[in-house]
Structures are given as C-alpha cells and as structure tokens.
Length: 453
Image (cartoon, rainbow, N blue to C red):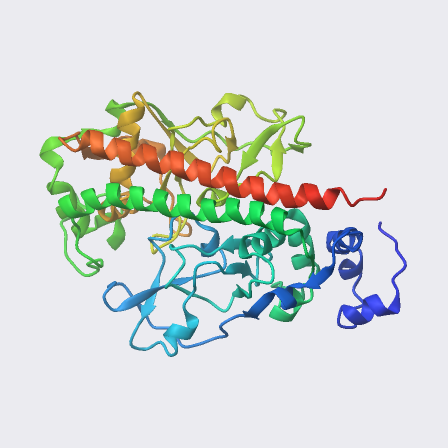
C-alpha cells in the first residue's frame, strides 16, 4: 500500500482528480525529480506549435494503393515495417492534407496502450494516423529530437501515463501532454541528443529502402493478384487444409506455379524449425535473468527490454534464446492484415534474447540463405502463402510442420545482390536502434543526476 499527502494545488492541477493512482504514480515521482532541474522549466505546450489528434471521421477501406492512403493506428506507429498496414479511400476521406503526418513530429499513442512514442520519419510522412494517435509538432524552442527523446524516456512515459482516464479503455488527451514539464536543457546537450535521433531516423529510412528493394525483386518477378477469390468450387480431393477460402487461395496457387519448378523446401535448407513449448513466466531483475520479449513486441522498431526471464520453470532455456540471422514468425492471429504471416529476422538487438513460445524459429544452415529466404517471405505473395497455412476456428495459427514444407525459389543470379541488401538492412536498422537508445539514455542519465536523495 502506498500512502502520501497531496496538496490541494496538485489535485487542482490534475483536473480535480481524486483517484489515488493519479497522485501515487511513477509520474508524480518523475515530476518531483524534474522540479529539481537546474534548468528553467517549460511545458510541452510551450515547445510545440500544436498538440492534437485527428478526431473521428468516416473510413472507407480499400486494397488498391492507387485509390488509398495508409492509415496508422496507435500500435502501428511503433512498427519497424509499415508496408502492410490498411488503407482508406482517397476519394471518401475529407481534409487529407491536414491529417497527413510529417517528418520530425513526435507521435504518441493515446488510447488503450498509451504513452508510447515514435519519432516520425519518411516512413510515417504522407500517411494518416487514427484518432488514437496524438501528434506533437515542435516549434523549435527546443530541438525536435530532444523533445522526442524526453517523452520517450522512462520519465516521459511515466508522466504521459499519469493523467489517464477511463475505467475500461485508458485515454490521454492533448491537454495532458501539453501540461507535462520539460527542462530547457543546454544547447550543446540538445544538439547531441537531436543529432542522434535525426541520424537514427535517417538510418532507419536507408534500412527500409534496402529491404524494400530486396522485397520488390520478388514482388515483380513472382507477382500475385490483389484480393482473394471467395466463391469458387473445388473437388473434395483438391481441398488443402480446410474449407475456408484463405486455406484454398487460388491466387497463391498461381503465385507458387511461377517458381515451383526451381524451388526448394525450407526443411531441406534449415537445421531447425520449431516453437518451444509453453512455460511458466517468472520475471527477474535485469541483473539476474535473460532479456525477454513477446511476439507482438517484435513488430516494434526500437525494441526495449522491460522484463527479464528466470530459467526456473523453463525446461531448456536454450530453446527460447534466438541468435542473429534466425527468421521469426508469429504463429497466431488474423488473416486479414494482422501479424500472422509476417516474418522478422533477428538482428544484434535480439541476439541472445528470449522470445515467447508464440514465435516460430526458423534456423538456417547458411546465413546468406536465411537472408535470401527472408526477402522472399516478406513479399506479398509469400505473406499470403503463409497465411494460407493457418488453421483454427477462433484464432488461426500456423504450425512449424507446415512451415517446413514451404517451397521458396532457389537462388538465381541476383542472389548476392539480395543478400547484400538484407545485410545492409540489418546493419543499418541495428545502428539506428543503438543511436535512439543512446539518445534516450542520455536524457535519463541527465535527469537522474538531479535526484537529491
């Protein structure tokens, strides 16, 4: 039980909120620490030209990129890959220019899972975001990278989540963000942090370009028709994994026929394809356990460890540790744009990390072949091919046994080029993550110096 005395002015500043979590949260402790700052204190509203969310509007979803524009939700802003997000109609969406995101903004999730921040780069720019995303457009009083790193730090997160409301789905509003105090850090410190964030954004864009070029090769060579034929007839002997349309995707049949004669099964070029058994999760202090990450966290750009796993309750901890170059596939989800069917590759950040039992591991005999397979499995046709393997009536899932039977194209004369592009993607992405982590940690370490206890 936490007990504290709260002054009336603190109750008033919290919007006359009397619920205990508001006044006994980590956010309160963070604000007390910020008050010890040797620098002049401003508010986020002082360093922003505008803080707002788009509100609700009518949405008409489309699948053709020529007629649509990508819409990002609160979880999508954190993703490293934004290529498979849903699109809404250009024709039936009002005030598109006003709704578009721009580089340099700080994006904040404000409903459901709240307080997560992303620094908008070229991947976010010219896309839309839902009403569940708060936009912060800086006004250059403080450098935009510094503002982002401050809000993305553990202290910024604590203050962002302090003012939540809602009994079922938690929310924060733009005025909650505007009221957060921020020190006027010295110019040299601001510049160093901003340089790291800006360089991180640039490297992330280069990484995305490298992966896009590698994937585009397979998209163009083995194209697949848009959409899904839902009404067709098949003989009982022709049914594949079930009677669902996605299990018998005719477009996938045409896609596979384009390379089937020159293909190889995954099980013939891998040493292991498996998902470890379920286990009891016992979390420890970071000095005593293995860094642990869930399957959904794989989608996020800047992977930050929040929990560490104890070997107790795990029969063989080696089955949960992944190594650089291992392909990772979340085995359950929806077949209409969810995480199911999306492949990830372990980089330096994930090397030695423990992952959830919901993630299938694909360990290749040769690292270059893993890179080739990764680029192919990221292509549009391959994603649909993977989704076709799903089974289950409530939550579809994929089994390692079905993954092992997948056929991929054998290497051709573009093999070295594809491998190089994927290698660049991994290295650039890793460096980008390191720069952002370093910038955020710099802010946290500076604030920690003000602790007078």
